Image 1 (cartoon, rainbow, N blue to C red):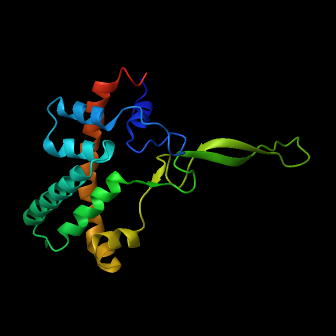
Image 2: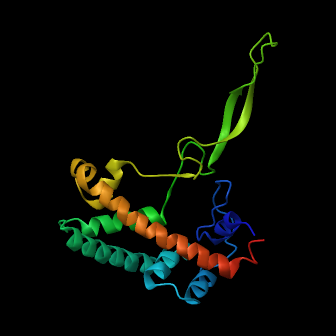
Image 3: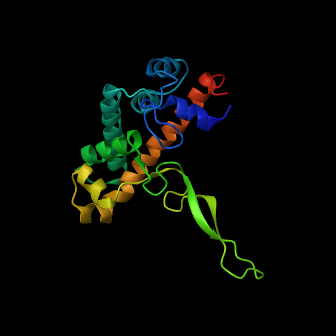
Length: 196
């Protein structure tokens, strides 16, 4: 029962764990939706699960609306302007649902690296290859969008986004990532026998 295998089986777009695309979807979106309905997950966590793992566009829109309202409440509590709540909600939902695959390792999280295997007894240098964690994505297989792209999606100038709103968008994204972790634990409970 490997959680990574379960996650690979749940991807709505059928991505394989080796980074290639187009593999068969082994756990159907309808099964994911049914599993999310069984239990005591809050509405926003169910929306995260449906948006990311069941590829439900209506849930993506509802999750954006929830993120916008959640961010506006945070703005009121902290005394921030609410000008960019719509754009930031759109950005964090986009980043959650469509993670960018790392170009260095093609989404695998690891890649072949050249390693110097020369010993003091060798006359010529000896070079080997080693399967190492990707230094760019730190083994996750995904990378964040550039600040310029994030600002464009949020509808904010790059300077304003980098100075103020980037940290706030990261906080909002962390809230969604926490909900995603809860969803994954819930789905693991329901599908653990299929992941073996």
